[in-house]
Amino acid sequence: MANAEKYLKPEVIRTVSRLDLRARFIVEGFLSGLHASPFQGFSVEFSEHRRYTQGDDPKDIDWLVYAKTDRFYVKKYQAETNLTGYLLMDLSGSMGYTYRQELTKFDYSICLAAALAYLMIHQQDPVGLITFDDQIRSSLHARSRRTQLGNILASLAKAKPAGTTDIATNMRRVAAMVKHRSLFMLFSDLLTDIEPVLKGLQQLRYAGHDVIVFHVLDEAEVHFPFRGMVEFREPETQETMVLDASGMKADYLEALNQVREQFTKECRSMRVDYVPLDTSMPFDRALVEYLSQRQARF
Image (tube, rainbow, N blue to C red; front, top):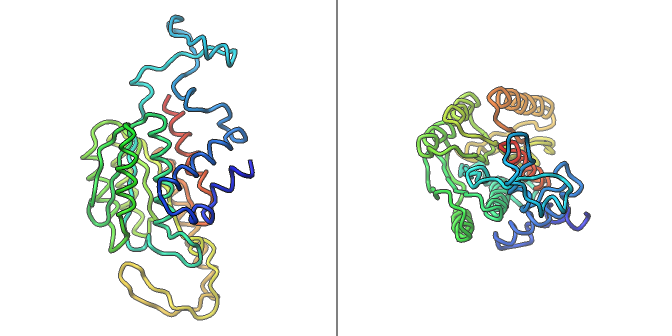
């Protein structure tokens, strides 16, 4: 388990330069540690089955699985097994920030996105990618073929965070673009007005989609390690301000906590999964959320 856990740590992943290898290390480290998680017994093999229930045709029972588990499982039809996913990547300039971590918020997010794409392709689930700032910059239609992983990784590797963002408007655009019910996985620091973001997420839900919001902040934005008089720079407008960090720490942390609590409450009310993360955290939490969604659908 110790070996598995080390591959999930950002400080280890950053030493791997190739994005495809980062994704593989994250997923394989995660899968090898699943035996200690609530997903004991989950595997690619059993993701293609569901428990036999009254009303199912006994002819559909998979007797090889019964021999292994002593339980009745039926093979799911293709329409049941395919979970279509879209990775939604925020390209705003603030995503390029880091204080003392080796990975910026953007680096951390693309590692997570790459790992989720790797996992979905491995499970033969179609996955696509949409990147955006104040408008949609690129989009890849969801596909399950192996070459799709290379397309997604190439697009992520070329993407650079810069400028401002408009999450709400782009969520409405995405809802109009994708007609087939899908799981949207949003990666953003959400450093914008809250209410429009919530309305954009609600638009996706109204369109029948499932949503996971990965709220990715820098470790320093969460714990605020600054002391004394510090010059802070707004990453998107480049405006600067000198403030007494020690004096404002308590108010800042209270405000951050209120923001997270509001997202938690509002997302729960619209049945959106909200996952607060920071760049010092292991990557497995995001993968667990994905598997939770996948199992909840079947």
